[in-house]
Length: 377
Ligand code: BGC
Image 1 (cartoon, protein in one colour):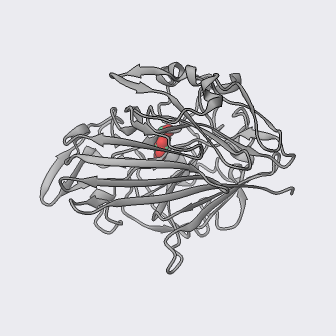
Image 2 (cartoon, protein in one colour; image 1 turned 180 degrees about the vertical axis):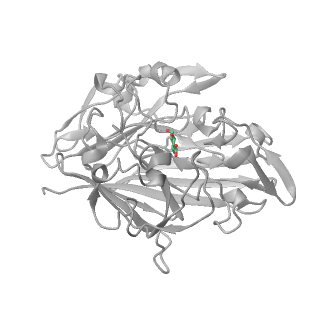
Image 3 (spheres, rainbow, N blue to C red; image 1 turned 90 degrees about the vertical axis):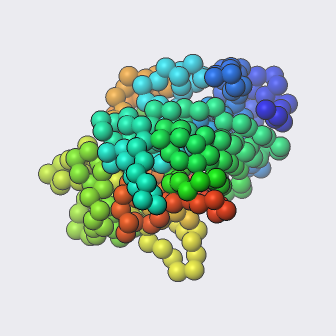
């Protein structure tokens, strides 16, 4: 593994100053330097000219930290995560920050049929598979190549048959700290027909240190419809309007306003928000604004742009306070949310959902941007 060592990382990177002179308590590289499954793991730091800073480990191609300015110009780490590789390996929630796959979200009964062949993938949530199985991409060590201070490329070769999926799949994910925020570009090829649906599983908290509920965040989702599920969160196949339901975020609404309306079945099944929204496609522009999230206390605004057909909004309903996060923050109930840009869950079993099939000679691509701004009320 080659990498470009930033001079500040070479000295352990404790505190650094952004161009505005704002202090950031970067995680130390040495807390992530280790060997797992015979492969080197480390931490990579990306910074833009405004001082926005991301730290990413190649264990699961995982975003560990992301500092952005708040309305007072103070840098806030808006990513829910852990302080060291040891803490990630011990954590009860293994989905803090990684790229998940080969198929993000659920595959019903851990089975799908492709070109008349039925494949069985490894179940890890009752009979179903979640996020590519127990040895999915989030639990693998990726190759990392950092050639400049704003971007890092992570790649993973998922062998034929891994977790039951056909075809050797090569996936590269490039994280770039652009002037606007963190851009994630995915590219994948295969040597046999397969299904693919990677997504970033970062938990955000726009308060900064993740010890406040995300229920105060005001969110707008540019989606008129969503995909209802059964009690195991497997899509029924229906594509339902959000209108008139607590799923409707077409106008900015605090997440906590309706999250506990569990007399509404989808919120009962999800234990809160845990649903795929069908994004409204802007004609001629596949890269579109999918969501905006705003925290009044910090003034931080996150805009999510993507070329994907869906976004899974997960509101941290399974967070239970068992794990200690960065800055000694407890990872309590609903202290993180994910906006996972992707194809719809279980699409391989629903022919009317967008296709997730990738064939030899084709290239899967995805582009998603988490853009940050501030507003003062
Ligand atoms: C799923 C949730 C799951 C979470 C794990 C989300 O993508 O939809 O049901 O609990 O990932 O962190």
